[in-house]
Image (cartoon, rainbow, N blue to C red; front, side, top):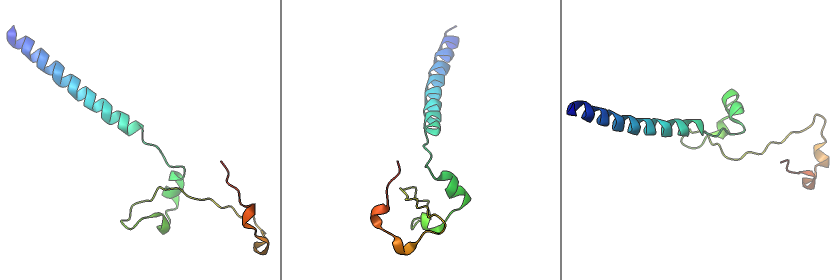
Length: 84
């Protein structure tokens, strides 16, 4: 009778500890934030996106869309605006 109780307590403690560790690992896995351009990084990995160690630099990037037929000579830096 005593052995049964000891094994039950031991497995309960082991189960609680392993369950708690697994829950933390799962929470870390599901809380990974994706970068806005992750899809672009996978489809079209440009060399300038990588740092000296060959790892993808997920910093901030500027998107510049130029309309077809835009006159470069008429460029005014004050025409630039940030879109939120």
